[in-house]
Image 1 (cartoon, rainbow, N blue to C red):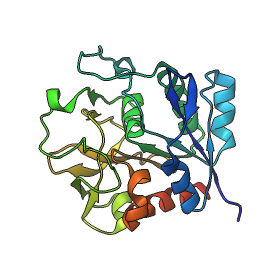
Image 2 (cartoon, one colour):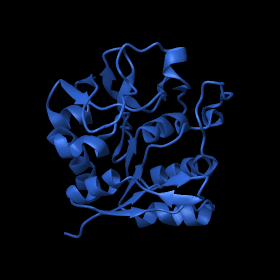
Image 3 (cartoon, rainbow, N blue to C red):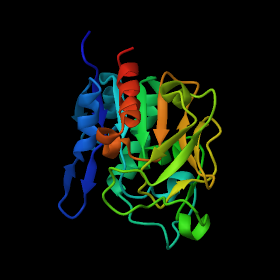
Length: 235
């Protein structure tokens, strides 16, 4: 069987006007048996529709804060830096990918993108709006866990890991506030934040608030998350 080809939305450095990628995303796909390809930030509909059909799966990666306009809010002063190019391209690409029913993995910003585009909202800053008791923004390095999540029964994550809890790393100051109606939760932090979601009406659409690409080399559980995604891209 041919290896699935996985498209990864790039990170974008505005100061250098350059696309770049953290190696963990690509290395995780390779380790799981896939072939990673970094996309451009092309923004026209024809190209995005063709892109959605061309690849076997898509990773929407971490990065800057989403523009609150995507979830119909004004930008608060405590919202962080935005990325206009990604904010313009990613919602359109996600729409076409979902229409094509391709496998999707959203990580950090990626889970927030899923939620916002499907009708949910975000906390623009956890310290200001949620007052967390878990460490959601741990200091570097990020290859070790900072808090526990509780896994919801009868969800894909429970099927993947067959356990009730998972220790995760964490590097975010925003998170899901109101969950999009179409999404279902798969894990919660001990202080009540949604940490993982899935879209039951599609082939494979999963999002994680933590960063498996930064911790999978030290955690077989997080490597299983990559393998489950890549295996589903083969189907």
